[in-house]
Length: 182
Image (cartoon, rainbow, N blue to C red; front, side, top):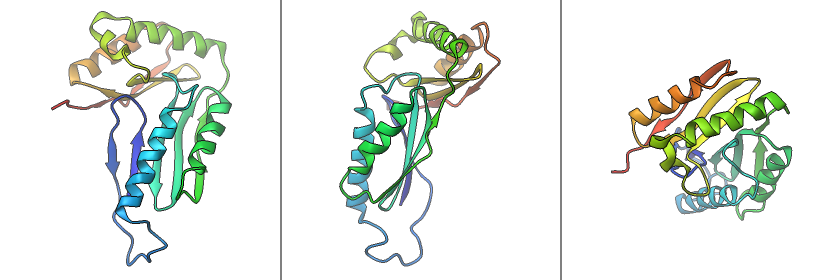
């Protein structure tokens, strides 16, 4: 069983793969063990002290192997994520594919402006509550990628409009997912 999990306040779990042909007992952990590893990886990543709104970490669990994906602002966050995951019982290999975003004062200014434009706007302020923000602001070379989750299509559109209104942005990719609370 393979799964991809986006880290955030409202997380989504998407299965994308079927079991391999006749796996041996050692090749694949039990469903219970796989679920435990997935929950522990999620927990450990969410507990990283410098994991913030400008970082996006996703992961795939495939048997005893974990692949880390996403983008982070600090190089230490990439290594911290790998270190906490490889110490989880049952994890045998960690493939760390997290990209460290290039250092750029211009991108840092854009991140601050985008944060204020999105989280400081009245109808979207409810998303600012909590430690882990559900809308991730990933800026690389003046290009913005929005990751995470919102409650409805109207909020997704509103976030996109607010982001496009920030001066200095070269392009916006809106990967926000709508998650119903029903």
